[in-house]
Image (cartoon, one colour):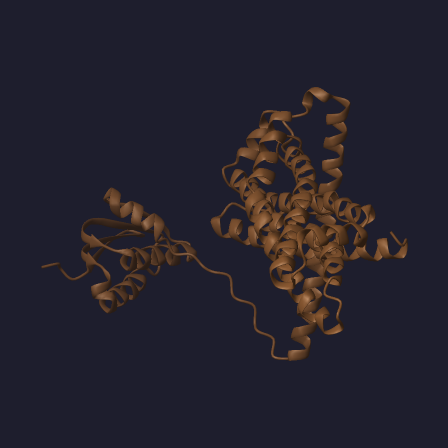
Length: 377
């Protein structure tokens, strides 16, 4: 049968010795609170207080929290405190369950209009800070690339090949499958709508131009942002948490040159190659659907496709790909270096990396579309 929590005190000059006994656990929570208040009352006017836990039988988190909170309250009053005869397991519990204050949560604004304006302002400030950080990071990457070009021995070819294999070859099946399905869907919807006008073969124009100019590179970039971009952020963030990036600094190595540049080069090489695969898969899917759903034979599909698209349609998609790869790599690396050392921070930065990358990929695609339209390419 556990004993009830108890304490006794003995005053010697200006010092007080508190002897704790019994079970300081959650079962006697109400009694514990009363004991602590009595303990604080006893300590008034003392210069020192000794917490003797030698007779404590059981101690749990609630008891440890109350004892440590009392100790800190006495210290705030200028009373010197210390523990004596503490069992090792109790010492660990007192350390882990130590009393601490928490920052007050900001008051919720009551004016809806002010709240919306404040949220918009915070978003603009955050966006501006992100653009500044990304620009600064891009400058460091350019400097590292320049050093690599001036000193070819610094180029890490093995790392580039390893990441290219990871980004390109391992992404191949899912990118080919997604674009195959999207090509088929576009062909089906195109044939369904154009049949009303007696021109189902024009669905081939739709599939060809849409795939090569927009969908192939856009879907591939979004898939790479979700798969490879998040992986880059997670890898760099985990290295930041394990202080491996600090270790590189100590060894005299530049983390951007060692970790970021090979990944960026591999991504810039992988995305155009994957775009070609995506275009091929989408056209193949469109051809099969046109054959099965619209009765357009593969021979007629390929003949009409040659007349519907030209090399400029192909190059529009390929030219976009390296720029989208650069955007994805920069955002993923920046977010990886922004991890602050906890698993929660790592998860938050990975999510931010994917969201920002997909958003910027769509923005870049829109800018290129306007540019190519303006120069009639």
